[in-house]
Amino acid sequence: MAAAAGTARQAGAAPRVGLLYDLRMLAHAPAGKKEKETPERLRAIWRKLAAEGVTSRCVGMRAKVAKEKYIASVHARKHVDLIRKISSKDSSDLKKTAKKFDSVYFSKGSSESAFLAAGSVIEVAEKVAAGELSSAIALVRPPGHHAEHSKPMGFCLFNNVAIAANYLLNERPDLGINKILIVDWDVHHGNGTQNMFYSDPRVLFFSVHRYDYGRFYPYEADASHVFIGDETGRGYNINVPWEHAKCGDADYVAAWDHVLLPVAEAFDPDIILLSAGFDAARGDHMGDCCITPNGYALLLTKLLGFAKGRIVMALEGGYNPESIANSVCACAKVLLGDKFTLNSPEMQPFESTWRVIQMVRDELKAYWPVLSSKLPENVSLRSTPLSLRSTPSY
Image (cartoon, rainbow, N blue to C red; front, side):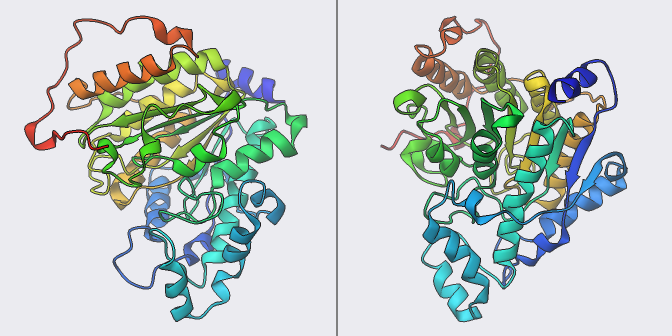
């Protein structure tokens, strides 16, 4: 069935795109106004998709609660128990417990939302892998890519994409998913996902993110380009760490064309799981980068050439309601087969982008010979503004 789905997309048949949205995940809500990760993020996306007629063109889906054994495949039992029980605490205990962790909050709806988010990504990934859907979008929260094996972190309670990847590889061998490409374009490094598959050659993990020489969240050295995996997984972890803010369409397209796409072709994944954070979008001050909606559409279009177009988008970050709504809508239309035109205001990558890409290629070329060739010369580059320049701090 999976092969048939890919063939159908190539032959021009209308793609079946799953769209999962469930009001129950809005129950995870902060008590105050200072938190950025709020239910309004999902509401804004849904309003935009409905207004553009996208919702009626997709296969609507509801969330399913993840079984604990699937969550425990990547998280410590103590961590699973914490999230399962957290919503039974009173408000003072919720705040006290949250303070033990880095940038998380808990509410009366947190437990249910976390289990639903994890179950949702499993559900859509399974249907795409089985060929029942050509691709899918899981509008889930809380997000997941910062969640580590033993602790929540950075708004993330369970690592939704990692749980789904492990499920496909180890629980459903009948689906024939033996190699998974995880692409994380959230503006923050996907530290949790990286650590969960760091020695696993079945998973090629690619994260492009602001790093700022370790000065950007999550402020960890392992977001650097020199962290490429361990043991049999060496070469299967790829970090493209931007040195400063304001990276946009041209910078991301360059990373795709000169790092991700050549390696993806050599890896030949069976499915792509996209940790789709939109906090690198123009207008999102959390990331202070400049990807346009059609810039995201182009990045996604380039990925459709792999894995027979089987892509699962799982929402991660993105904290400007207008930016995230416009970006998700552009991506949804790509999956539905709509055409678009990229009219980016600036299509010259930064000089720093070219340097970072060369460093990444040099680090990985022993594992991916396709990266051994020289980068194109005489490329028009933007100089980095003085206000963005910084020096390494190690």
